[in-house]
Amino acid sequence: MEAKKYKGIIFDIDGTLTSTNELIFATFNHIAQKYEGRTYTDEEIIAMFGPTEDVILREKFNGDKFKEVYDEYYSFYRENHPRMADLYPGIVDILKELKERKILTSIFTGKGRKTTEITLEILGINNLFDMIVTGDDVVNHKPSPEGIIKFIETYNLNRDNVLMVGDSVADIIAAKEAEIDIASVVWDSYAKDKVIKLNPLHFFNVNDFKKWLMERI
Image (cartoon, rainbow, N blue to C red):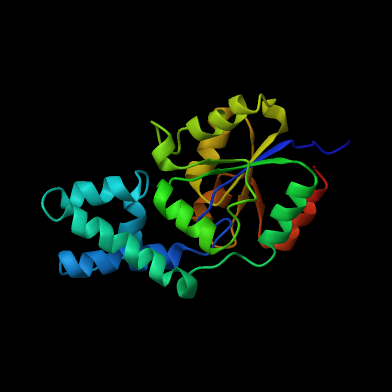
């Protein structure tokens, strides 16, 4: 039986394309130490995920200090990005191959627009996507499939020919609700056991994923 052919591929960012989790945790804790006099565990920070950074910061620091906290957060994120975050080896080759083969690509991330643009710009991949959907561009965040549907409708794609690539449970739920395929990558997933338990397609290194994907485009 011939493998399905994908015409549109949607990527998550953190833990999927980029090793940014350490940077995210450090940025949150930089703010927490400076303005709350405490630090959070990785699990506590992960539990905050869903809304964008702006929403989380406004909920915690709404008032006179918000502008100061906001500026400090994004300054730390940008300044420490080069030493604390990078693309996973082999990812650029995959993205360039998709571009050469004229496969439509999109980002769908829970990150806000600002951190998304910082990451894509610093890592030099902002020109490799046809569409970028961040947490600031949707009403309902992951696991809602709103960002997936936006991509499908913009390019008038058949759902059978669209693939979501992500590292989280939220990516799996969003893809299933949108009725598209999901490839769960677990090379840096903070929810690896839960992701595998949900029994999606999963890949333990970038090379395996690349080989599987190239047979389907």
